[in-house]
Amino acid sequence: MKAVSKEKLPALLEELAKEGTLYVPSSSGDMSRFVPWKSDIQIDLDHNTTMSLKGILFPQTEVLYDYKFGEENTVEPPPPGSEKIIVFGVRPCDVQAIRCLDEVFLTRTYVDSYYKEKRERLIIISLGCTVAEDTCFCKDMGVNPVEAEGADMVLFDLDGEYGFEEKTDKGKEIAKKIASQLSETSKKKPEAPSFSLQVNSKGIVEKLQKMFERPIWEEVSQKCIGCNTCAYLCPTCHCFDINSKNTEAMKGYKYRTWDACLGKDYALMAGGHDVRPSKVERIRNRYLHKLLFFQERYGMFLCTGCGRCLRECPAGMNIAGFINQLEGVTVDG
Amino acid sequence: MASSEQNPLVPEMGTITKIIDETPDVKTFHVTTPNGKPFTPKPGQLAMLSLVPVGEAMFSITWQGDDYLEFSIKRVGVMTDALHEVEVGAAVGVRGPYGNSFPVDIMKGKDIVFIGGGIGLAPLRSLINHCVANRDDFGKLEVLYGSRSPADLVFKYDLFDNWPKVKDMDVYVTVDRGDDDWKGKVGFVPAYLEELKPSPEGKIAVTCGPPVMIKYVLQSLEKLGFSDEQVITTLEMRMKCGVGKCGRCNIGSKYICLDGPVFSLAELKKLPPEW
Ligand SMILES: Cc1cc2nc3c(=O)[nH]c(=O)nc-3n(C[C@H](O)[C@H](O)[C@H](O)COP(=O)(O)OP(=O)(O)OC[C@H]3O[C@@H](n4cnc5c(N)ncnc54)[C@H](O)[C@@H]3O)c2cc1C
Ligand code: FES
Image 1 (cartoon, each protein chain N blue to C red):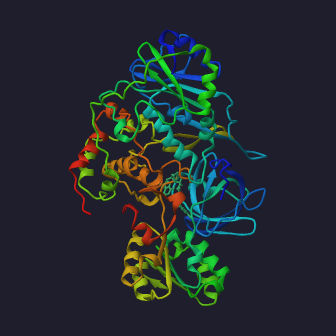
Image 2 (image 1 turned 135 degrees about the vertical axis):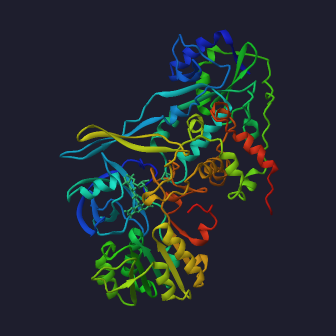
Image 3 (image 1 turned 180 degrees about the horizontal axis):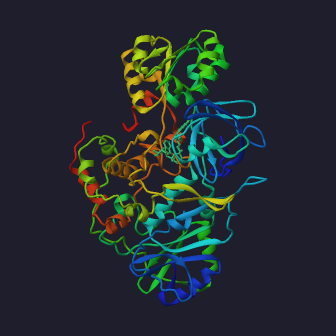
């Protein structure tokens, strides 16, 4: 396998940055996220980031089009970008999340132009995990914690050096560009890490199909304060709202923002009809979307086991705990 | 349907060419674009209209002409208030057509009873007019419609003038509360339905209205012997994108904007009971 020693990583990143906009994981205070690389940046490859790379493809706010009224009425979407977007150090759970977002934004009749335009420019360089944190459960959600299926290139932490394996044509192209920085290593790929958190997701789809009306929803939603932290940190949550902003009397722009399903008026309609009037219905919809509805529609979980919502929820909501709680639930037939 | 290469979130700019006052809070709008009709929808399909600086909302396309689409819009909030204030010539954005449509092919040759309440006649009207325009493809047509008061009846020209003249078509109108001039029926739609007792034989029932009305109409139809396959309805949920991406309009694993808004009762019963 090709590899680079850890000391030589900065030089390699400098090389990568010549190919496009390079994003690397970096911490500031308690938060870490992917930021554009600069030579003096502090890279944090020890832990997964607080914010996933979702915002690079699907920004928190994004202009859909500018509008102008007057003699002529025009709407003008922003021009597509041309630079490659290279994201370095993406964990396998977050690569899996991109596969979920690809299904949403690129399939089923309509293609989201804004997402597609960035997705085509995206090159994912993943970093396989050698340590699982105590909130990690990707393996139990069907993710390979080392191989990062869906990445263009995968990095392995080999003690003192990083091994490289290219997975796609895009990955091969990038590998060529950095070939002079790499040398051959005889070290083997690391073993999958051991997980302290075990989640039993076997058979939950079939079970949840029969559990729409159950007291468990009342019980599991009690703690929720509806703050939507889970949705904002979730690498797969893709709901959005659309609004407009006037910059002048007859001019402005339409934009979308991340939205989240635990808000009070999320499903409220004209005439006061609300199909999800309390947090019981809203949590049920959220958990079922993650664990059942997305499976029914796209054949995969909309939860990758990244553990962010468990770690950051101020009220202690725990979807992994919920899945394990299902073991004790019996449904007939 | 829009091709997948078009940007589905960007509207085409059009203008309002005609406004009809239907009731104190419902107006009908004709919308066209410099290139003529924005698209040719099927009965039951939807479009996103935007008064660009104000907002965007989803509406049923209630009918279409050679060069315009028609929408009937009830004033309920920010965007619809603003729409009710505009005059002919105003600029409006339009994108679509969205959603599935009424299954006209399986309705061919059958008798059809349409059951509507309030603004719920708007989505049904595209189908009713389709049946009228292709009269020989369908059996007997019956429309049962109700509103809160005589002043709240929408499409009075159709209810009292156009439709009753159509061959083998009957129109039944009721109001919750009458007034001094009202000589017609007073009472709720589901009760009138049970009184009229349409036979389910060779018939399809299509219903749309406020959630409470739908609930009781479905019960009445069941009592009258209609099977779940013979009952068709359209659903409404909050919508933002209209193209199955923003996640706003789900019921179970279905997005109403894309997989709906038209469902048979048999299909609905397979979904979680959130409708
Ligand atoms: C499939 C479908 C078909 C529809 N067809 C018609 C139609 O033919 N004629 C018609 O008059 N209306 C129709 N509507 C409803 C219409 O979309 C709402 O009345 C409109 O969005 C309200 O916008 P607003 O800005 O005026 O209200 P807001 O100021 O946004 O809100 C006023 C109230 O309406 C609720 N609301 C906001 N958006 C929606 C929404 N999309 N659906 C329902 N309630 C909403 C809010 O929660 C609030 O209670 C349809 C809706 C759907 C989803
Ligand atoms: S309105 Fe966005 S998914 Fe239906």
